Length: 461
Ligand code: PXG
Image (tube, rainbow, N blue to C red; front, top):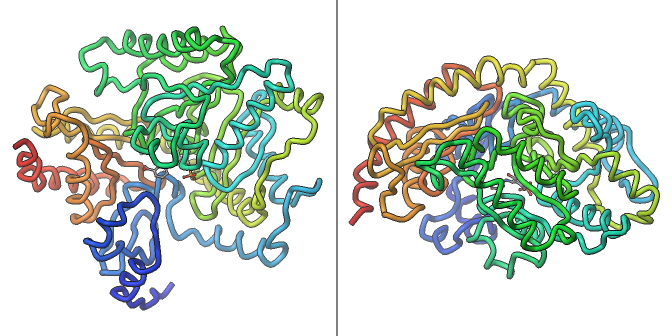
């Protein structure tokens, strides 16, 4: 494709003038003179309007699993738009791609997870979860079961329900959140909160906090526990061995539904179709988005167990919930084709047996860096913790939060897109990334750490 010629300075001016981007500091944007304009992408590389080619270590926003520039996805969208660009699923109607996608997802989810509700975003999926779970308990004769237990630093979206379920403290004041009925407990963040503890003991302690909270609020009031297999936006928090099995057992013990948010971990990221399969647990509901369409179209879904659907069928009446774009046929057609690509190219297995292990080895090259406290990864999601004192988890300012963005900005200047999360940088590249690209990623991070060191050391004063 021939690159279009944009007037970038004018776009940046208009961006400032008219566009309010997501999760931004609008004052800071004015100082910066507007957003970075990304104009095109191919493979694992994005291109900005200033002519920079940037290796996309974040797969867009944790989502472009099959990489950019997939003509097949363009074709799937075009064909579907020609045949039927839109129809809803409200009035006892469905469209072929919607039904076929639900069937495909049921196959991949396996077991009792045989039903699928569609939405357009991960946040909407979690709103659906909240309403469906509370409705289920209500019609199932246990109306007091309304409380959701979640973790601090979890990310479940940006809507009123999504951000409430999430445990990002800085998000809560915006809009007066959390809404009632959400309890937050410890995250299984060993490097940050269990540094000197035995791994399994730390995992057990975090799981115990869930049980303690259930007992505190009364098991008869608890509807569900929700968690990401690996917390993504929270900083790639990989739970200790045994943690998820313990959480599942606690949920079972008190008859609480287990919701596993696969918005980031689903579709191969951890080397399995879903993160819950990697950790060997069985959820009752599974919100998913992002990698479902590799970000080519906005679409999300909630996998729902048959046990829940049986109750809804028997006693649920009208489930008065849904979105105009629930099961959008073009989005569904693109998602179907995306899943076909993931299957045909064996991307899930590639992450598990080839590129995931390669990534883990490559990250270890950073372990000796004086600024690196820990590198960790699972499949193709990883983090580098930045510390002020080697061998500890001490941070540059003495408090959390400043180092990640400094190193991130340096990485971007050096041609690598990463996320800076508090005092870490995280990487979540497309599942198609090559070994050479991973090597380049690690080289850029190593170089950026050196370049950022003076700015980091200056933080201390
Ligand atoms: N659940 C999880 C686990 C997510 O990571 C959502 C739900 C919400 O999805 P939508 O499509 O409504 O955004 C997400 C989204 C970040 C960042 O700062 C992460 C997400 C979204 C925006 C920014 O890394 N994850």
